[in-house]
Image (cartoon, rainbow, N blue to C red; front, top):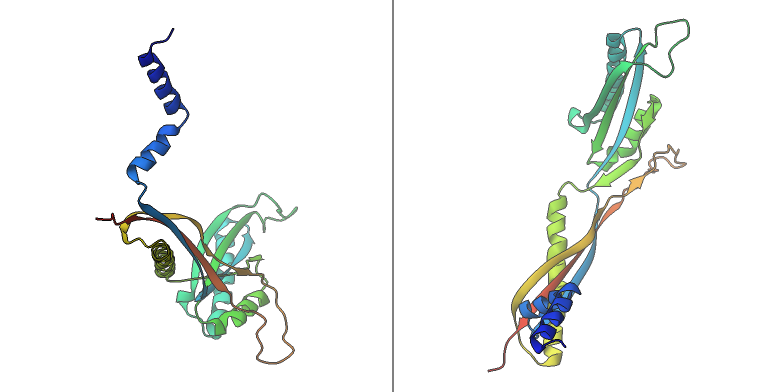
Length: 240
């Protein structure tokens, strides 16, 4: 027959292996005289920049010829964009590739033995230029053209705003509970920023649509959605 001390020891082992110690520690850390609240917010902020990418490809009988031809194509499109008011700061080369053409060489010619590809990102913060820029690039029929994406230049600033708003929501809940239960809140003893979606960047498909009325844009800007949630544990003041 098991002795009393052995039985107690086996019970302790069972509790440890089954995870009950985690709850005991939680109760030991956050005692019963606490209020646990959460706060969640969803902000919609107008996007302050838009961007899209285009790719030019070129071929040549040697690597230098292919690269020069690709650069020439980028130069032509860039000058066209500058003509409508964009600056060099609006354009960024994001990828450059060159090498032997292994896919579609010419059968009896060396003119396509090598290829070069350049990706250029167009970033615009004045949306009055957006549609004109998209149309201008499309006129030169690049090899590829991405959708339009929208974003926030000061994302961290808006993230802090959403966090503050979520904390304010949690504090409001704690104050309401305290009033209804006729207790007094002391101070927060635990704050957790729970996983959230963050910023949702929207995209518009690039499709050139002729507006029937002059001056009407066929591209519409989007808003960025920011979601933030927090969990806060407040200590309740002990009655004297």
